[in-house]
Length: 427
Image 1: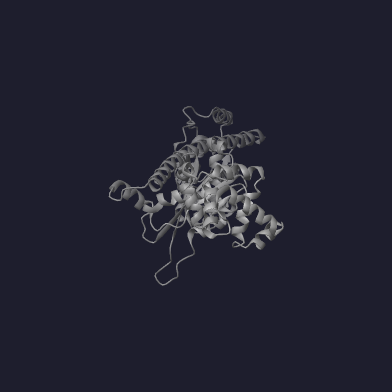
Image 2: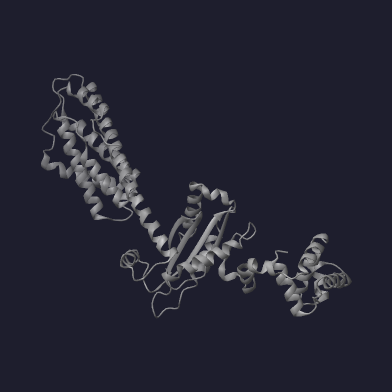
């Protein structure tokens, strides 16, 4: 909100103060001494407000000192009969602090500290001629300082939020563009793209990358932007303590995160542990309502699209009981079945339908027997112990399967054929 008109409460307080005909006394410092007061106020703020001292910044404190001096001059001008103006110098300061990402509450605290000191000074510096009871004048002066503080705080906060929003929108657009380029693939000969990626630091030769795709356990929740953003924020929080960079956004109703890190500190140091392994350990801390697939490490940004494909495959294998799955943990068999099942299903052998029906009638016992036999390295006694049944029960079930399919599950190739057909047929 811009102040096209002076703040009414501040104008009224200044009018109420004017009837006392206050004037600057001999103790009022001339304008040349305003800088000395501003230095004292800046030192007090730096002592009292952590944001102004946690990271020593000479320019930040110099800007604060100049701004305090501007407030000193403005208050003196108003007390000498000047009209309330638009506080453009406050807006300019707010825009600077927003660009520097100094927390807005820290600056508002600085205002309160600064103007409390100035209020103390005004009580001693302003002469109240011919007033046997200066109480009302002092109350009017205190009200004026209060209204002044409130007015500039509103102006500052409004300008800060507007500037911060503009920066956030611009940064969001830039990150969305980077994510689109990296995940979608890019032409290295495109000069504009190369400049964008280079400025963002994604073309350094020592970097490696991995990709994560996440969604809620209820896919419909991903249509809610707030829910998707919470998942994105949770991913960033999970890896906050790792020295990795993360670029995160929402694409095609999935939260997409690209992680990057250097492979080794120098040619004399050993390579670091796999990025995907370190990230996966932290992502296990995501809540129980999030499913996530993670790619393996990719050696260059041009391979990030392959990483996204790996993450998508891994996401397909997730479940409520296994919420975070890395592509590297998937066996060749599982990957082959995942990739080929839809092509194999129309070509399943003629006996498959009979096996499906018999397995359903046995409440899944036939398939459990085949899998137990495979787990026991085709040892019938071991399969019987695993299923807690007599070995003769295993033999009877295997005979039933052979009658249906013509395949002897005690032979390696026949057992492999049966299990592949069952997996491809989702049995």
